[in-house]
Length: 370
Image 1: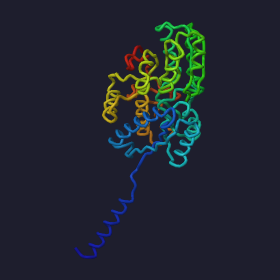
Image 2 (image 1 turned 120 degrees about the horizontal axis):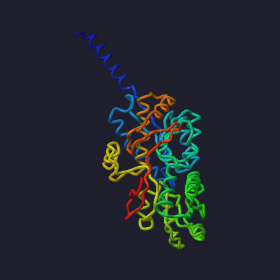
Image 3 (image 1 turned 45 degrees about the vertical axis):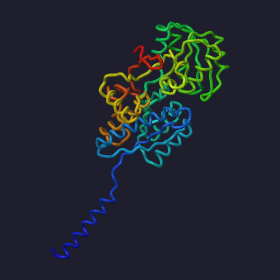
Image 4 (image 1 turned 60 degrees about the vertical axis):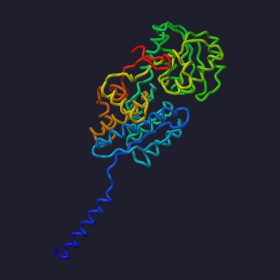
């Protein structure tokens, strides 16, 4: 080979090498907003676990439309203003079109109008609020409040035999809505709400409110909190002599309650849209993968978060990256096999799932009815 030809080939080789090195890998960025600090931190941690497991599986199978998926995670700190700032950052700076979050109902609430205004597909793994049920860009892998509270009221009235109920709740959209829906369902059956007390979401001394509920002599109290605050309520109820049956919301099922308040939580009844004992292959596969990665069983939030990313990826794979097209693709899914069970979205992006009634028995969360 002549020297000139050799030199030209060498130069061409290095040019091609340089081009190859400077070309960036195509990436699909998905935003994640999670309440990693504050009162909702447990659920934020579960959300991140779920989406990171889904991320690993997606990228191991070639990503989405040939692109590697990358998560941009923001911490809402369980604060509404921080959650909105996080979404604005994801949209305005990172340029994402799709966001999963938040992992706390009250901080998800102000995100919805921002997402809809910017044509951003937003999927929450935990927000139940009825009033978010609109034809917009908001989806959720958690059923709405009414879908869970109605069967709980029925179980309390017809199976537990209670007729007088008290409610203790925080002054939040989540608390107010659960109390409203429960009241409507329980009174329709013939029951009575004899007392309703509000406490601070971070309140550590609720004895006064519990004493007021005790004076109304309820048969059951609906404890509308989760994790540590629910445990505080149960502990201080025993201290003031409030001896009743207890109901809880979906947040009842979490490791903190069993670890720190197991004896006090015994017998509490709550609705739950996830069956860890399901024989559905997609559920078994998710649980096996989760246990292998994290060394424990997943909860509802982790399962819903895993599903949020997987079903979003499936919609993008089908429709491309235009948010309007992705919205319609999501609405077309019927009985999508997810880690939390079968998912179907209605016209407003609300998921429809089977609701189970569960209780704490011998320090374990067990199903009693569906």
